Length: 197
View 1 (cartoon, rainbow, N blue to C red):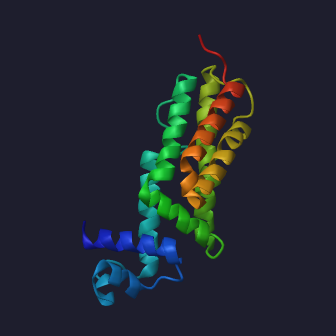
View 2: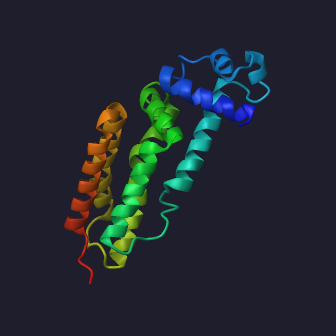
View 3: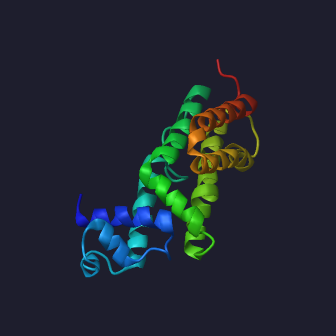
């Protein structure tokens, strides 16, 4: 791992634990094992570190989770839909970088307008747009009954987002929360998906 990567890793850990304002450049440098001025060889300052962290987390999320621009292969059955949705849930809950970013964003969203916008995009708007597109495309294939795909996307995703945040607060209950998420997704499919031969 390069020094620049170590700086980002340590900064993210500190931001998630102490908040952005509670973390200083010297603290980050100390955790990396370098002197504060050496950090400036890699980044202009703390804001530059934050921007790099957000950019890399968003690229990671786009690659492994998807978005309305990148929905991946359309599921062809209820089981594929459940598997796809649970795969995205698993990535969100278990990817160490995404977990730390989410914890950091949840804390900082009330102190920083830019971070509030990013939090809203990832926890509400972005995921709902992606599932609106997936459900709309699956409706066109006759897999979902005709309805408002945006409302269905909200009905699917809002409880999952709440349960993921509960798992962040209560990691000791993760197993039962994952089971609850899967039951919710299966129930959603039972209610809205058309039976296929």
